[in-house]
Amino acid sequence: MPTATHSLLATLQAEAIAALAAVDSLDSAEAFRNQYLGRSGQITLIKRNLKDLPAEERPIVGAQANELSQLLEAQLTEKEQALKSAELNARLANEVIDVTMPGTYWPQGTRHPITRMIDELSAIFAGMGFAVLDDNACPEVETDYYNFDALNFPADHPARDMQDTFYTAVAPNVLLRSQTSNAQIRHMEGRTPPIQVISPGRVYRNEDVSRKKHVLFHQLEGLMVAEGVTVGHLKGTLNAFIEQLFGLDDQGQPMKTRFRTSFFPFTEPSMEVDVLYRRTIKGQVLEDWLEIMGCGMVDPNVLSEVGIDPERYSGFAFGMGVERLAMLKYGIHNIRDFYTSDLRFLRAFNG
Ligand code: DAH
Image (tube, rainbow, N blue to C red; front, side, top):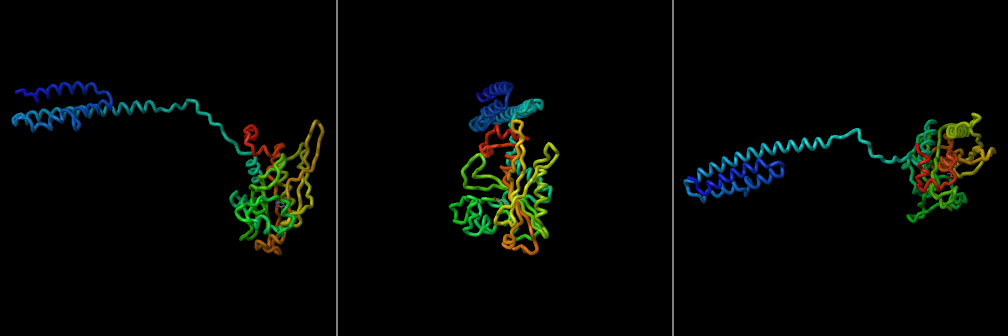
């Protein structure tokens, strides 16, 4: 007894089976489910409207509709599974990494020549037993106590004018340190000798920038305090350092050094160290004494200030300009070259 719903179901079945055969992607599978089996799919609608059919047709049409939807659902699920695994396989095949492909070239940075110089100086002193204080052990924004007073610079003493200091607007006593010697005070405070440290870092001075001077540069400070430290230890240490830094000349001799009397408020006696710098220009050998650092025996006042007994302990200190040493060692003639970020200059220090 074919009724209208009956033949509709038969047509639908033929249509759906053909449509299912045409499903070839996960998208078309979803469209198929929506069209026939989803919440407002055609077969779902027939099932939902069974109540409008004559009572005797309902069980027959209902059973057929159920059978059809189960059949379609089963086949569709199987198809979806096959499509999913085909898509996964295709993706995996595409994602294979070809390790033989040439890489992308990224230019490599190098250490800045000042960083290299500091590393080199630090390595030499570390080899002689000095501990290397890291950058943040000592503030660059400092108070005049650590930069001057504790280092035995009397208030209003002209020695303060030796270094053209940048004061800040923060407070009248806050400045940009003009020397790494603040490290001596910061490190000795609260410690008991033996002390043997170096402290590299930035310093600032209000100077006219020229080939030789800059408002920002680097120093490396050294300090050794223990019982029985003498000028002999100071000279021995610095001569060994200079020999390692500059190596031997063409006659197999270390660079000649000269310790010249000088003045610093925080050392007594104070000295400056010169090296005999030899160059050959147009076949002529030129020799100059060049000053490379200041040094001296730590003034007893400085030791007392940080609570170290000057009757029991003595020490030496030294301070050198990193740029100056780098210029000497690498033959650089303009200090500004270090700060202009010119890649041609920086690349010359590759390595
Ligand atoms: N702080 C001095 C300057 O900037 C350099 C110096 C001299 C440091 C003698 C020292 C020293 O530790 O003993 O001119």
